[in-house]
Length: 264
Image (cartoon, rainbow, N blue to C red; front, side):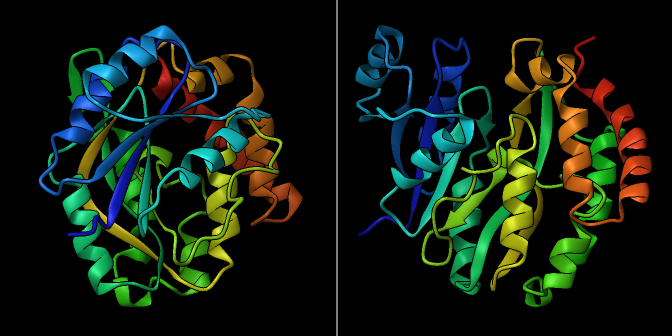
């Protein structure tokens, strides 16, 4: 039977968590296609690909992180594609839930679940950050009305509520490029969701924690926060939803959430 969903594992350099991610996407209730995409081919990635009998697709035209994400999406040849971040893990029912929800909502642009955070060996489901995001995503709980541009933008106007590694793209509706062109390093996902929010189609939110996002000192997000880039990009994004003077105030408040990305 033809597969409906593909995990494209986006590998970069030599992440110690890459094998954990690969194992999680192979160990799924719904057996998705799995491939690896990378702009940094190396023996470490090749060795893991050989071990798990996975194809490695190399991006020979690397420009920036946005381009890498769009390239990864293009590597999937099924209706549904999830770009699996190498540091993260996907629960046993992730792809099953994506496929089942897609069957009922084929007009979806994206489908995504809630996620938990991983700090060391600890899984954190209910910290303040996750509670706030779930609250802000309430406009999308009604799946039949989740195609409303107003509802989609309401879910995004106070911050990036949709976790990039959790998102499953409906390639029948989403046209590339999605991420490329933002010029951003941190908020490229928020940029993408804001862009897609103006297009026809639903944002299908599955209110279950079906994947884990790793928080560590080695992740790109942490590096960007430490460099002060995120605050500048947050202001750019808030100005897409609010007048400048309000956007500046929200950005100052939003900066407080950065402490959640620190490993204690």
